[in-house]
Image (cartoon, rainbow, N blue to C red; front, side, top):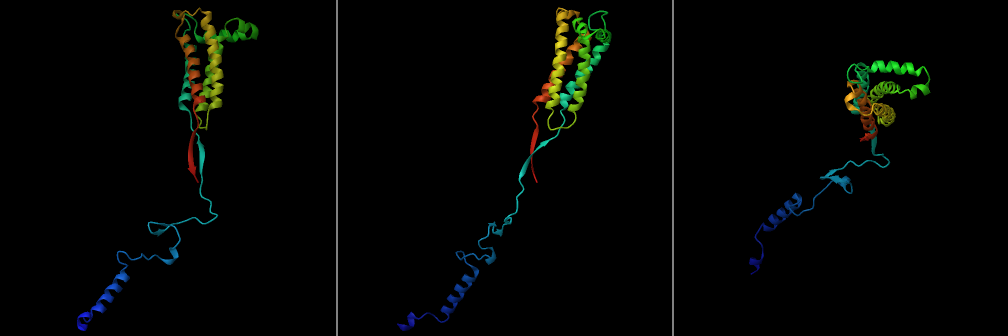
Length: 215
């Protein structure tokens, strides 16, 4: 009976060897060993994470307004100036009517008699149309310069376009709004305030372009 209860010879050494090998390998349930110097530090997928030292300032994103030209508004104002120049070469009435250049010369001559007589004589409208076209060309070129916003230039262009529109409306009212009497030069004069208003509103209503820049 005593011989049956005793394990075979060498079985205890084999069991101890298996337990020792399993403990050295970690086993499927054994604890995972990590370096002692990484205990308590943040890790990413088991590797130590780079954490900025205390007192190190992190880069903060800043809002930057980009400078850019307004080609659409500038093009509209330049076209208004081109229409004013074309009105000088074309007749403002049907048939053999006077050209815009002849009306401009008459307006300049009337200015020498005095501002009151010049304004009441009904010859100041062509001068205002041509002068407005020249100013709109200059303002249109300024819109092509890159800037954060072109609202100030757009505001000045709006004032010039409104003055030109008032001159054109009064000129149309003096002729009784008879559209069949207007020549090509007159329609070019009408296009000056229309294009000026479009370009001015485009420049005023365009919002600045803002982006984030992390430095």
